[in-house]
Length: 313
Figure (spheres, rainbow, N blue to C red):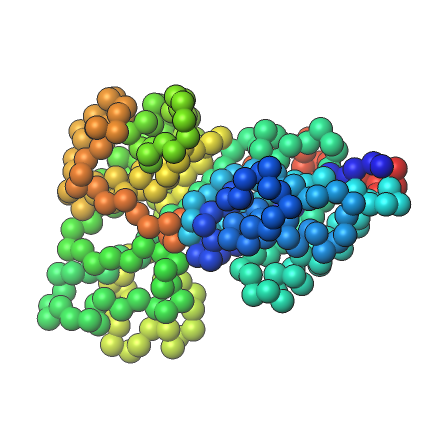
């Protein structure tokens, strides 16, 4: 029987999951894993009744609690009649399953792709976003009014109050991370055995000041001075990232902007790559403010997606 490879774009809210990667041993693939993104995708694909056990290959690994606007994966499926599944049918089946089970995953698009395509190895880059919402702490008569956060933003961004935040200093520090460096200092504790290569090339870090989120006017009580709030989107792009590299990098930039560390301290952490170079004044950021925005592919791959392969063998 002939297998067909399918490529899926999808989004998710990570709060309900222990991570994107399947947590149960691959040798036990027939056992469902509802607490990972990969596991839930495989559970949904079984509803199509393929003759093989669906094994989803993820393009990117995200930690527990991390979200995604546009992640990708691929999977090989076999049918008895050797005719592939219609891609929109896969999208519809999975989204119905996620809706019925109240699972915060949504398939955005499904494509037929050649069997030579690999969602992880063909990826050119990955772009992440960390969202910040900052309230003033030096206003007259400081009270809870200045600490208000819209309920829509609760555990969707990092919210804090401060009387010291220098965005230009933050941007200055961000430039130091761009280019090819050894980011061992900015890697979380490696749980995998053996030596880990920690050199990566960061294409850019962009810090964008944005207007307040476009929620209903009722999200902001009349007593709240929204113009005093600072909303920042921090984007990082690279071919690949180390474990917790994005969260630790943004944490260092926030510490710099709040004058808890200096530019020379970031230079030292990059020039002396070691977990012992990490400054204890830097607080690691929570996962819920982090979003995988895009997994980028080359023009040849995109042309294949747009063309879509015929279903018949």
